[in-house]
Length: 145
View 1 (cartoon, one colour):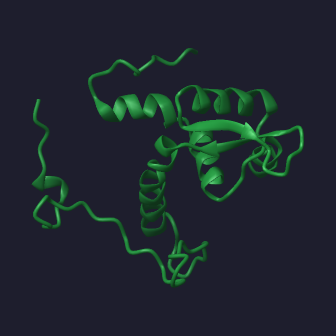
View 2 (cartoon, one colour):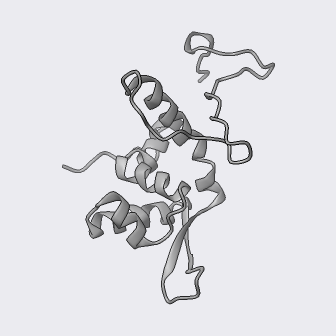
View 3 (spheres, helix red, strand yellow):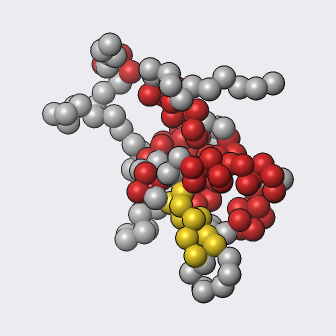
């Protein structure tokens, strides 16, 4: 069954989901943020069929999320690295991670902790704030058309 394309939808959420909403794409991005760069590294980490991984990587490259560069070790291989556009997705992945930590683990269940590299302290939960700094809840915002 072919999915409906949302790339021309008026909703920014729909357009974003059209590009990165498929779970393999998000897991590829997760791995890229963890430092994976080579096709074989993504494949080993995800256990994904080569044709599916190739298609997802191609879509991320074609849309400017990843770029292909020569291998950093000078070998004949190439690597996939996050672009500026790709790096800007970090907040989305951290938000998904923090929601999962808060809602999908049993009390006391262990999971890897995201920490600030500089001080090794856990990252503070993300918050939605107004321009003047007030903490906003879902009821405090509206969509203007």
